[in-house]
Each structure stands twice: as structure tokens, then as C-alpha cells.
Length: 178
Ligand SMILES: Cc1cc2nc3c(=O)[nH]c(=O)nc-3n(C[C@H](O)[C@H](O)[C@H](O)COP(=O)(O)O)c2cc1C
Image (cartoon, rainbow, N blue to C red; front, top):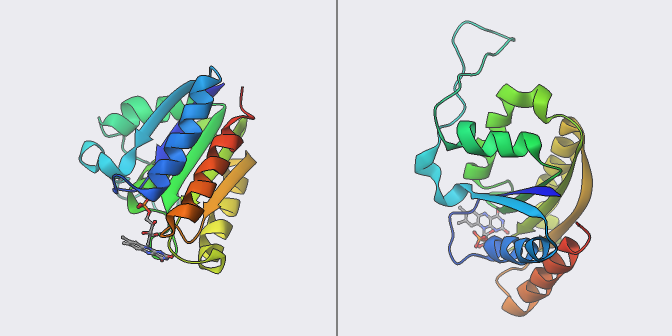
């Protein structure tokens, strides 16, 4: 399978990074073709969504000559599986990941359907703290018409023992993609 992993946290070494690493290791071992973009650590290489003026309700996106336009979006369009990795920041996704998601807009048509999606999330709160984010991912995947194919929710990620269990879950989840 062609797999694209998008991470959003700027934190290294980080908790969501560990989930991504474990998942990636498994899917690479299984012979998948993997492209990973760590958006949170590469924010200087891409721009936020930019739209042309005077297109109210019919937004027209500009296409900056950056890594998202030239590398990330072509890989995404081609992907069978999209893996969205984030830590919980103020009840939502990391800003860098959101900036990449907003850039989907110019390619909505090409990106819709025909893909599976996995979400890997970490955060300090307990499960209840992830309610908004869970709903967001559910609605996003629904809108993109991407088939949900599994998720790992590493709540209480300050607790390394608990976190390592979730890292193992991410590794096991990766086993199903070949
Ligand atoms: C800017 C910021 C916002 C955060 N917001 C939340 C939050 O809303 N709820 C929560 O449980 N933890 C929150 N946290 C804690 C992180 O989710 C937690 O430290 C997580 O393990 C970080 O993952 P990372 O190492 O992959 O970045 C926040 C941390 C930061 C830096």
C-alpha cells in the first residue's frame, strides 16, 4: 500500500511522535511504501492556505511553490492510507497539521474517496478530554469519504507506562496494512 503519515507536533522527542514511529516501523517492515511529513517540525517550509480575493463563496486557492504543493499533496492524492498524527492542543489538532489539512482545499476533488484513514493521538488529559477531537476526526473523515481504518488514543500520555501500551497498540494496528 501507499501510505502517507502526517504528524503535527513540534515536540521531539514527543509522545505522538512515538505513536507515529511505532506505526511507521511496522508498515515499513510489512513492505508498504511510506511517505512521512512531520509538519510540526517543518513549518518554515510551507505556507498557510491562501485564497484569491473576490471569490466569495467560490474560493480559489493559490498554489504556493512549497513542499506541501510539490511533495505532500501529490503523495496524498496517490495514497491508499492516510495516517493523521497529532497531540491534543487546546482540545484540537496541532496547528501545523491543521495547516496541512486546510491545504487539502485546493484538491478536494482529487482527495475525496478511495482511501483509508488512521488517527493516532496523544494528550495529557483522560479520555473525556478528547471528545471534540474525536468528533472532528469523525466529521473530517466522513467529509473526505475516507474509510476509518483504526485509531489509537493515548490519553494520560504523561504516564510513560500507559504511553508505551499505546505505542504497542500503534505498532499492532500497523500490522493490518499490507
Ligand atoms: C500548546 C499546548 C496545548 C495543550 N493542550 C492540551 C489539552 O487541551 N488537553 C490535554 O489533555 N493536554 C494538552 N496539552 C498537553 C499535550 O497534549 C501533551 O503534553 C502531549 O503528550 C504532547 O504530545 P507531543 O509530545 O506529541 O507534542 C497541551 C500541550 C501544549 C504544549
